Amino acid sequence: MIPLLICSVIALAVILERAISLRKRRIIKPELVRLVQEIRDVGDVPVAFSKCQMVRGPFSNLIRHVLMNLHLSWEEKLHEIQIAGKEEAKTLERNLTILEGVAAIAPLLGLLGTILGLSEIFDVVAKRGLGEPKAFSYGIAQALRTTILGLAIAIPSIIASNFFDQRVDSLVHEMERLSTILLNKLYASKVRKEVPGRFGEVKLRDLPEER
Image (tube, one colour):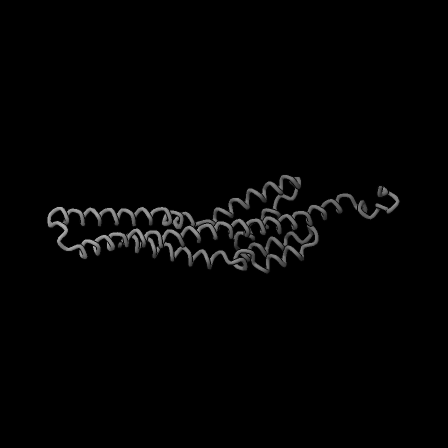
């Protein structure tokens, strides 16, 4: 029972810590979302970079990847964002392996406790016989309690682990989406500066007719 109680405390601590740490506003900070919305061209990059230096976090790290090395092609930058997103996902998933471990170990500890309890009961029965059926039944009930407790710890741990895995996937997907929006803005601005007036020279008569 003592190892099971320790597992329950660990699982509860991890669940509370992840529930607080994986709040959306804590990961995708509103000031960084506004930054993505307000950036218009490559001239805003120095200001955006200094903002990311002040506001730390996984989303800030992804934005810095977008702002750096703009000489690379759009495809190379997008690949860089995806790699950075996977790295940030690993950071966000920290401690979830502990929760998964508790979910796997708790039922086994409970089963072990039940088997040890039953072993002791049958040793007593072998020596004294079944003179007290109530005591025998009570002993079996006591032995089964460790299995019940083990399952009671494991089931919520599995549910919480799956929930937090999905939360991490959702947060990383949203960060990558916003980072891609910023990437598109910067590269569109870069193309406009490299080819002045290119986008303003397109006339309606130059567009293909609908069929």
